[in-house]
Amino acid sequence: MGESSESAGADEDGAAEDGSATGKVFLEGQFLDHDILKLSAKISDIQTPVLGAAFHLKYDSGILSFLRYDPGEFLERGGDPFYLVTAVKDVLGQETGELVYGETLRRNDEFPVGEGGFADFYFQQLDPSINVYEFSFENGVVSTLDVVRQDIDLVEFEDLVLDRESLQDGVVNADFLATNVAGAASGAGFGGGGWIFSAIFALAILFSSAIFIFLKLRERFREKKKFAKFYL
Image 1 (cartoon, rainbow, N blue to C red):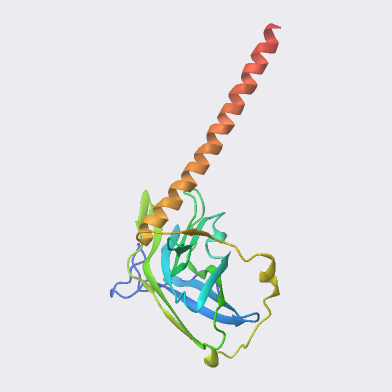
Image 2: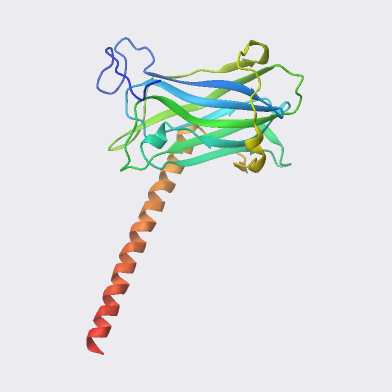
């Protein structure tokens, strides 16, 4: 799979002239050993440079429990993105069956196009006898940066029905998960994907600003020390 591709039927903003989808976010699943299910969120055929993405992933919390996530390579090609991955929980601390995902690059990073992976999500199968699992997207957005952050129109989010019996790869070893099975914080009460993306983008800007201020203060402190030594 290549890192970029060209679309003959797209305008300058990446929108197809015939109104069809300009990119697709989709899921791929794999059953690992130790009753672990791996779910990969990926993007393909995107021609507009991507600043970040956000979505809610719905699953059945009665048969699956979220364990952790691993970053994908797509936005990592552009820099060091910020992540927000949260399994929403109720007041009793029980998963509600909604996973909140957000990822953004910084304003000065490189924004990738083409195809690649956003993240891999790992779930514990609570009833290994179940063979079919359903996952669906809500509040999905993929964003770019044109002076300000903008959502890319006509990106298709494709749900998944994962059937163990239809997979050809079989069960894969998952011993590496034993060392880290707590990759996300709990939370409740989140709005749409755009709100999530805006929040992590704001955190990225705040983090960059804090570094800038720290460097300026350190430079000013050094100048004061030099000035003091000159008069001693």
